[in-house]
Picture 1 (tube, one colour):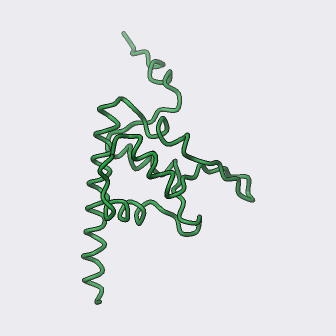
Picture 2 (cartoon, rainbow, N blue to C red):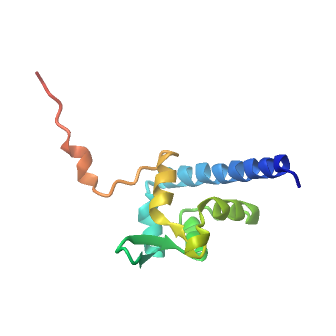
Length: 126
């Protein structure tokens, strides 16, 4: 297959993944849930030699979180596209929770770590 064919396939894969992200964001927003609120219990902390800690989701635990979010009719091709976009081959195809949070923020699902931060703003009345 030439490069154009591969590019078209990559574009289609990204379109399918984007559709899934849109659907997931709608489900989360309708339910008043956050990405961390659903996926944290499915994640496992991984400590790296430089003491970096990442919350990782295995492919199966990610799919469990997807189902818990209410996305029950995820098709096999949709799951494959999501994994192609999210999975890190260098991490045994695990998904980094923080990256998922950032992606979902682009679709309107904000994941505030400290809910009180929103109330700290006091407008100037002068």
